[in-house]
Amino acid sequence: MKNIRNFCIIAHIDHGKSTLADRMLEITHTVDVKNMENQVLDDMDLEKERGITIKSHAIQMRWTPSGSPSKGEEYILNLIDTPGHVDFSYEVSRSIAACEGALLVVDASQGVQAQTISNLYMALDHDLEIIPVMNKCDMDSAMPDMVEDEIIDLLGCKREEILRCSAKTGDGVEAILNAIVDRIPAPQGDPEAPLQCLVFDSVFNSFRGIIGYFKVVNGTLHAHDRVRFFNTGKEYDADEVGILKMDMQPTKEISAGNVGYIISGIKTSTEVKVGDTITHVARPCAEAIAGFQEAKPMVFAGVYPIEAEDYEDLRASLEKLQLNDASLSFQPESSMALGFGFRCGFLGLLHMEIIQERLDREFDMNVITTVPNVSYKVFTKDGNMKEVHNPAGMPDLTEIDHIEEPYIRASIITTSNFIGNIMTLCLDKRGELVKQEYISGSRMELLFDMPLGEIVIDFYDKLKSISKGYASFDWHMNGFRPSNLVKLDILLNGEQVDALSTLTHRDNAVDFGRRMCEKLKELLPRQQFDIAIQAAIGAKIIARETVKQVRKDVLAKCYGGDVSRKRKLLEKQKKGKKRMKQIGNVEVPQKAFLAVLKLD
Image 1: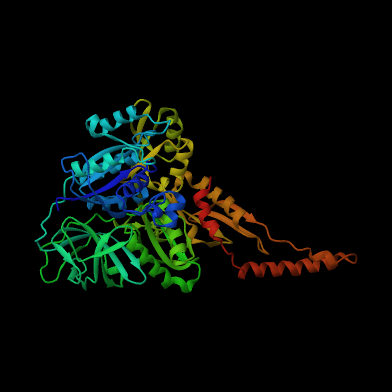
Image 2 (image 1 turned 60 degrees about the vertical axis):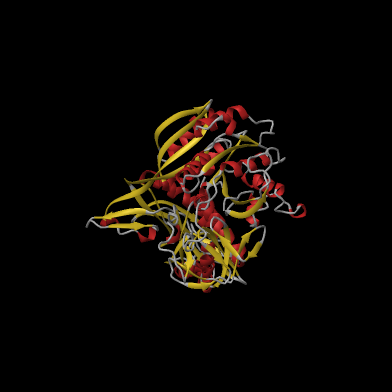
C-alpha cells in the first residue's frame, strides 16, 4: 500500500488538465505511441468536439521515480482527470473524495481564475495534499513570475514548491510525477479489515450490465466474492474485478488503497448508487463510508418525447444516463401542450445542453426541452409553503401571500478595464454589489448577490462576450429572499401554452412579454387563419402580435359581372375561416421553446 498514490487534477476551464494527463500517460508508457491522441482520456465524441471534459476519468499508471529518496521502486499512480466547468463541479467533488492529493494547475498566461479557487477550497475541505503546477510556461504570453505570486497569495506555499511545466511539449512533467510520489501521502487503510469500498462512478454497458468504479478503503476484494451494496441491501457475485488502464484489466484481487471496477451482472440502474459502500456478505463492515452530498439541481426544465409512445424509452434512457451522471435528477410530469414527459434538474445550462445532446446521440431519443427555470418557495395565505419548479404548478394569484426566490453569491474575477460593463450587466440582472477588491496587479474580484433565476438563461454567455472571454465566474447558493414575481403566460388564439410560461420579476414582465411575442411571430409558421400571440399576467394582456394568414386570391375567377358575386364569395370565405380558427390548432416548433433562451 505504501507504493500507491491516488491523485486528481483540478483547474479552471482550458488551463491544460487533459493535456497534462496525456503527457503523464505518454511518459509512464501507459498508452502506446500509436494509440496516442489529444485528450486521450475523453472518450465521448462530445468532449472531443467541444474540447471540454464532461466526465471524470480514472486511469492507473506505473512510475519508477529517479533521483528521489524512493529511487528504484515502482509506484502505482491512480489518476482522475476532472472537468473544469462550473456545471460539472459535482464530478470534481466525487473525484476529490477518492483521492489523497491534487495537482492544482494554473495557466501561466491567465493566472488564478474563479474556478481554480472554488476547486481548491473543495480539495482543502477534504484535507488533500495540494501540489501547485504552473502550465503553459513556454507560451509567449506567459507571465510566470506574476502568476507565481498569485499562487503564493492563494496557497501560502513557498516559491520552490511551485512546479513549472509545459503539458504540450512535456517539459517538467517528470518532475511532477516525482513530486506526486514524494509529496502525496499513501492511502490509509487495513487490507485485513472487513471490506469497505466507496463507489465513485458507474457506467452502463449493454452487454455486461452496470459496471461500478470504486476505491477500496479497507479490506481486499477478490473475484467471485459474494458482495452486498450497503444502501440498497442487494447481494451479487463479483463476476469480475480489475484495474482501470486504457481499457479494463481483470485481476484476481484489489486491496485497500487501490482503485478498480466491479462487474456483477446488475441489470437495474436503480440498484447502483454513486456514494454507496460495497462490503462482503460473509464478513460485512460495521458501517457505510460517508458518501457524497447529494447534487442540488439549480435549473429545471421539462423534457418531453416528440412521439408520445417514446415515453417509456425516454424513462429508460434517463435512468441509464443518471448512472453515468449522478447530478441529473428527474421526475414525471405532464403538460397540456406536450403530453407526458419528465421534469429534469440540471446543474446549469451547459449541463442541460450536454444531456440533451447525449440523449440524442447515445440513445437516439428526440426530445423537446421547455424553458429552463429555478425552484421558488410560494407561501400561501393559509400559512403553507410549497416548492414550485414549474410555472404550471403555481397556485392561484388570490391564494399567494408572497414568493421567495433563490439567491446566489457570485464571484467574478476580471481585469479592471472591464469592470464598468460587468457591473452594468450584474445590476441589470437585479444584482447587489457586496464587495470589490484587487487580487493582484490590475485583477479584481467582484462579489454580487444575485437572483439565480436571472443568471440561468444567458448570463454566462453575455459575461464572456463583454469581457472578451477574460472574466471568470463562479457561484454558490446563498438562501432565499422574498421577491415580487409574476407568472407570465403565452396564449395562442386564446389558448395557454403551458410549456412557454415563465416566472419573472414584475418590473421586467412587460418588456419580456413583448419580446417573447415578437420572437414567436418570427418562428411560428403561417396558417390559413390569423394566429393571435398574446402575453398575459393573470387576466391582463400585456402584449400582442398577430401572425397573418396565408392569403389566396379567391376573387381571381370573378372578373366582370355584378359586385354582389364577389361579396357573396368573400362572405362564404369568412365563415370557413371562422370555423377553421375554432378547430385548427397551432403547432409550436422546437425552435420556439429554445428561442426564449436567446431573446437578445
